[in-house]
Amino acid sequence: MLCKLFVHWGECVYGTYERSLDHWLFSRTNGAVPIGLRNAGFNLVELPRSMRLTWGYFGGDVNRFVGLAARWRGHPLQSVALSLRRQITLGIPALGLGSFGVG
Image 1 (cartoon, one colour):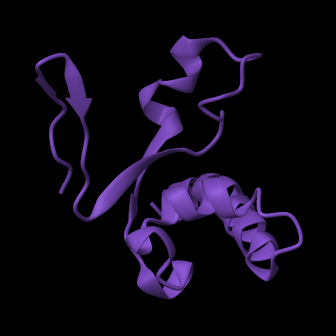
Image 2 (tube, helix red, strand yellow):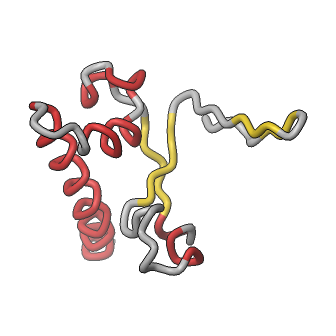
Image 3 (cartoon, helix red, strand yellow):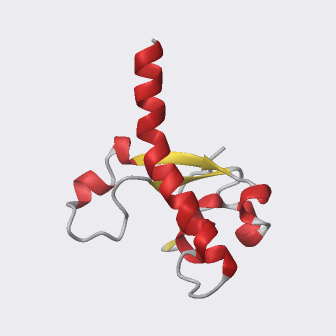
């Protein structure tokens, strides 16, 4: 369940309990893609928390693990994070095509 965005005394606080939003196709930081496409509904997917996939890093937040561990040069979990990113990016359209073919 996602918490709401709270603005209190000019400070934004955003917290998630079980899931986080991921920009699966166009990265949030990709300046070559217009911001309207980056934040479009089809580009956002909720990722659940998983201690098993993240080995407890970042409290089980898969989105943070994939985004940050991919930058850990030389760390064994860097390749795991990059592989997980590829699986998310390729798996979403595969699921869509599979359900279209079945349905």
